[in-house]
Structures are given as C-alpha cells and as structure tokens.
Length: 203
Ligand code: UDP
Image (cartoon, rainbow, N blue to C red; front, top):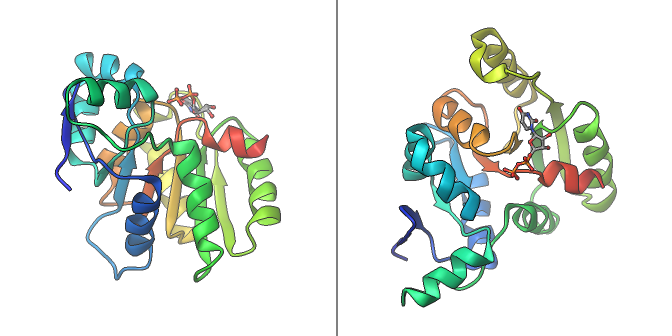
C-alpha cells in the first residue's frame, strides 16, 4: 500500500485487521535494530504539526501512520484518495490484545497516564485478556521530557520489564517525539502512541 498524503502527513491506508496483522508480525519477529512505532494522527495533530518539527520528523519516520479521526478519513475521500476506515489508537490496542489472546503470550508495558491509572488498566487487561501480561507500568512526573535523568529511569524500567509491546499514553506531541528520540534505546519490539487509551482501559 502506498501512503496517502493528507495535511502534510503520509497516512497508511490500512483497515484495523490489516494493521493488527502487520503489528502481530512485528511483535513476533526477530530482533530489529530499533523499536517500530505507530502513530494515529487526528485533526488536532495536523495543527500541532505546523509548529513542531520534532513531531513532523516523528510522523515521517513512524512505521505505521493510521488515521485516528473521521475528519481525516472524510478529507481523504473529498481529495479522491480514500482511506478505508479510521483506525483509532484506543480501538487498536484492545484489538491487538484480542489477537494476542489467540496467539503466543504478549508482554506489554504501560507508559503514561496519571499515577495509579495504569495499574488499574493492568487489572482490567489481565481480567479480560488471559494471554496478555502487563510486565510494567510507569507514570513519568511532569516535565520528564526535559530531564535526562528521568528519561534514563524510563528506559531502565522498560529494559527491566522486557516487554514486546509498549503502550505510550503521554498525549500528543510528547508521546510521538519521545519514542522517535528513544526508539533505538527502548527494549520493546513495537510501541504505540496511544493518547488516552490507558485511561479508557482503566475505566
Ligand atoms: N499524560 C502523561 N504525561 C504528560 C502528559 C499527558 O502521562 O506529561 C497522559 C494523560 O494523563 C493522559 C494521556 O497522556 O492519560 C493522554 O492525554 P490526552 O488525552 O491529552 O492526549 P491525546 O489523546 O489528546 O493525545
């Protein structure tokens, strides 16, 4: 599939099932040099992009760029290069967990959301998806992105936990810029920039 350019972002025209299949392949592939990462742009992000070259670079280098918002899908139709459907981060994560429940066990790490929220999400994940194991959670303090020591702590926590999948809920553009910067140091096969998904799962 060729990427579709919209609002200065190149978007992958994949359906949910195709995205899940691609990511499952990456999760179970042999080690690659860096963590593959997925972003899910919506219209807010297209505004952020104008003033953030780190966000533009993160989008450019992302391994999968999926249209989160229906306005993005509508625009693609109006421009005659239709995207099949929206694929939101908050739908993609449970879809992956469900797919993992039919396959080999999946180790995942939840990075972000307010203190305590990811632990609540972990309880719900274990209850609902027998084959998914939350091997770690971490809620970085405010301003972590400008603190090298704190970034070392985050990387060390992930390295200790050895997840295959990293769910990053730090909000845009922090989550995209963070994984783009640290993808060569993150000990996970795949990372998903997932916005408020950890909050949704926590209920
Ligand atoms: N968040 C965080 N650290 C930050 C900023 C945000 O953990 O420094 C979390 C916040 O608690 C929420 C998530 O990021 O769980 C997503 O926030 P938001 O809904 O604003 O992001 P969006 O989905 O709009 O990108």
